[in-house]
Image (cartoon, rainbow, N blue to C red; front, side):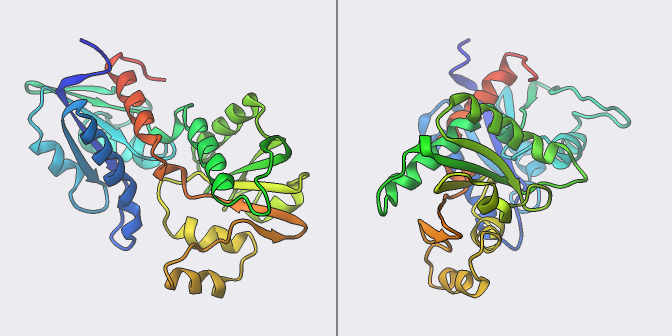
Length: 284
């Protein structure tokens, strides 16, 4: 059977979800709708860990012979690799590893790796960067070869995997030699997002937030960390306009800021890559 077509299989695309932030669910709904439109699977469902419909409820209702569970998460972190696999029966207590294929009656369940850690997410970050300067070329679109790219993540000193996905994409982007420099920056660990102006050795820089959704971190926190007054950011959001004006000149630099990588249309292709890997029995 072709690994590009799954007529006997269902896809459950799931995210963390939130009961307080409506933006959190938007990328799951967006990419599930696109994959449903393509007709690759017999069924495509959306599910969440922290909001309805819940992952366990959706899984119990799917009748396909094969079911692929694809976590729309940035990294292989605590929830996507420990909590959720244990809850669904993929991970056994006191085991550091877990089986990603599980038989359940007449069904075979496949637990895919996190979408955000796939090497092709470098293409998504590059797409975001190209799009933003094409859309906002004032005074003229900068040459990417003369521009610094910053890939921004949340980061945490408690979990190395939190930044591993970002570091991977930074290395991939450096290998492409498209930008003058590529650097990772973080909200909660060094180097910090606010250091972009000091770290940047070019006149122009583009910051791509390596987050799944355009939630509070992307729309409010990062613009403030980049130096935009919080009252201005909040005023813009209240008016329904972008919280960052592209480009903004500050500290002698011209700075462009993109939407999150998780909402880029190319992510649907990365999800399919994760499904193909799971179907082929690849775990890395």
